[in-house]
Image (cartoon, rainbow, N blue to C red; front, side, top):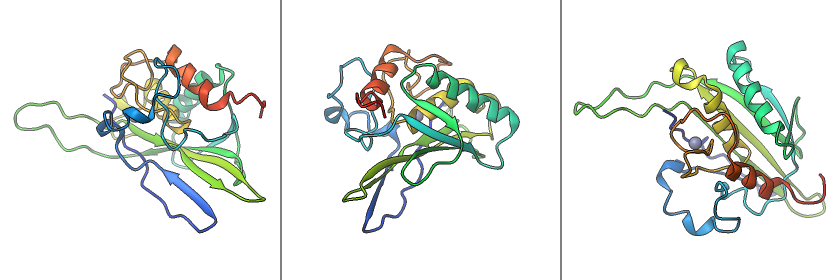
Length: 212
Ligand SMILES: [Zn+2]
């Protein structure tokens, strides 16, 4: 089962504003409702910090040094799923400050053991999310330096294509969906192809019409 959290907040400077999700999306399903009505109702919700941003469709991605070959293969599979949409373009390499970037990483986090009453413990199988940098003025730009990670403590639960697709979805700006067919459903359904709503949300973020 996939339950995830977002990276911790980071510092900001006076010139560059960096915004990052801080709240576990599992706990804000109701509070975010009113902010998510701008696209067609069946679309997967968009992370609030990505809404209204003008982001390039091109991302440069790289792996942290400790990512195993098998985890890399799972991440690469997820990259292919998004590239096949033709909406975003993820290419290996390092980005400049002004370009979009994705860092793939692994971490090991053991969850507390099950409750005495027998309730199943939710396993965190990964986390990921966007980090928006927006600079205004003569040198204006907006860039997303995002992260997507898999929890290798539970390899059978976390090193899965469906989980990597979910976490990469967060990195690209998708939020949790109530649609079980969406890759952004908060509990892993083993979905490895994007739903119509997932694709619609990506289009609303990246199809800006100026062919960036
Ligand atoms: Zn999630």
